[in-house]
Image (tube, rainbow, N blue to C red; front, side):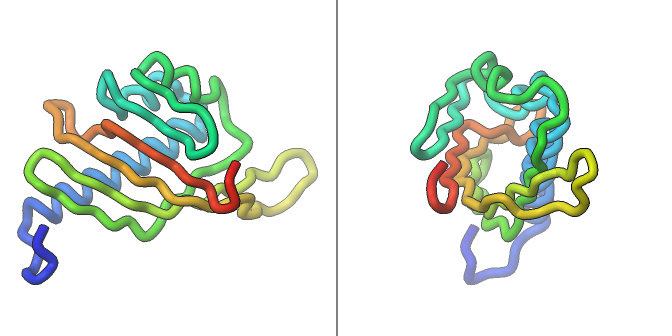
Length: 139
């Protein structure tokens, strides 16, 4: 989108749907729902963790998601989204927050990083085609 002119209604709708996709990604991982998690990507999508593994395709993506609640919560903020027809990019900051367990009280930010995403509009809505994450300070 041209940043010198105000957004049109389609841009606003696309942005809202991409933010929703990102929130569903966070919740699917954090709740340990591998099938929903994998469905948020195209069939041939790539998830690359800087300094770590690369996952290609829904089966691999399903395998990277915990099967049951994770010990963390993903919080994503300050998304910068560019929409160009049926394609989009997103850069969003990630905060990894530890969930309290046992007698431990309170949540603490454990790490931060940045996602850089390529997305495509499909018949089922927006999906990630490539998601790259770089954690501040590495893995």
